[in-house]
Image (cartoon, one colour):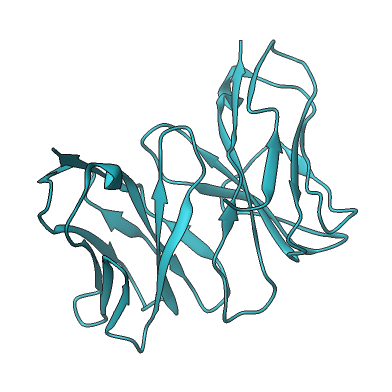
Length: 114
Length: 111
């Protein structure tokens, strides 16, 4: 089991609320990622970070924002949740370096926006 | 655009037989292909990685092949067990370090 944690595991929230999904890893990995996955569909990269104070948007446009103030912590924030944000959000990390890009995933947060 | 295509239909295999899953990619050859296992409600778990200059990789009952001519990777589970039932994801890693995942193939091992 990888040492990467996500909280909460499940979240049901009303439209318009601000939410933060937490992701922490204890492996000292420089690279961290956020993916969005709908049932039966592929993972879509929405944000990534290659180190502290580094954040980039992924291939899938997202209204969420991320921050990377500490190596181990990579929270994702939605300022105003909408039903279209309902999905599974997966956080992952990997060691630095081009030649070794295995990703370690957290258990995911299942978000439902009513 | 670069894509990873996996058979979206579920694959049913009798216990003890070899399960073979297919991953096809488009455009240029990726630097690596990776295979992950995902159980319902969980995050994917890394299984194997194969580089473009490798033909085959093995790990216990698992074997992965990489055919750059066919633009295809095959993932084999030998002596399959019901505990192998899961969704298996193929992912390409490009030279720019980006990873693109396929939708995965659901595998059911029947006792």
